[in-house]
Length: 173
Length: 274
Image 1: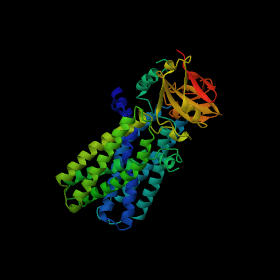
Image 2: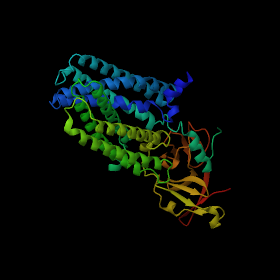
Image 3: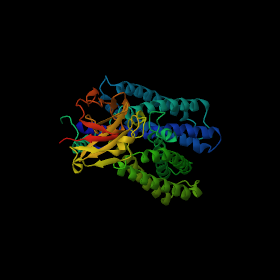
Image 4: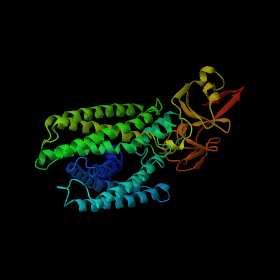
């Protein structure tokens, strides 16, 4: 059980795992929208329709791993911190986004092999999904860059040594 | 202005780490499509799709390079993360060059059912280097705190640490810091006097000196933001009163060390007692 927590938190890697994994859906789903739009403008034809389909699948696959890692990082934040609430919104939005792209995928599964352009409903779902994803990812970034979540967590010892060498007052270890 | 924009200050979030999702994800997708073309040669368009994914990856990588370079130039030259940042930058240039070559090599055979071995190897090497580089970029944020809380600061951060020795001067432990005379309001210096690292800041037209390292996770207070007489650590927002060193907002619990500042005839002297 402990090895699993260690794995999901990224301790083994010296880098939190959630922000690594989210690169995939964060690139795939806006990418799918771009490919959808290109197919609408009759660029690329069926290649774009298939590429968009593959991108959504790959994004969903990676988000399956991003969920437990993110949940674990969030559970380590104290409830009274502002980052806890942001994390909660981030999580809810992400679930909505993943659900939208899962539905989106379901609507394409019959037609992506033949179609040369994407139809209206899946395109609309890609637009809404991408907009919500950007909002959600922004919140995730705010947790790091505004509130320092996971920052200096794994390098605490190194910085302590640097501060000690620099003559700083230090808390007890 | 342009620098502030590329550093993401209006968004209150650095721009480079937002944009890098795209090349990372798209280059991985491109490799997966290459591999899929080997396993499923009967599925049409896989080689073509891989090319398009890679092309979009290169375009977004070049866009991400611009704010990335600005972020790089803003790292203090003696920061422990500077070498990591240099490696990250160099690796990324190599990766983009490799993918540029890769696009050129495969552009003439987009109708092939299977990807050929040359571009496939280029993609594999590209992903390995990209993973290494992405990992270093993450370490810059999560270990070194680069870009964290930077948008809260309104004045430029110190480009260097100034080194002085109090005891050579023989002035009762006081050392002249000429650069401190030229400080503007809410500007800081990062100064090392005989091993003691401190921030010198000008607030309300007075000069104050206090320890550089936050007492929580040891973030850089010379890069902190000021609100009245409070300095706020860029990393986890602990606040301290610069006059007394006292904690005014957690998570830090321990007060800062402060240093005496003496202004004589417009010259600023900082005292280090041992």
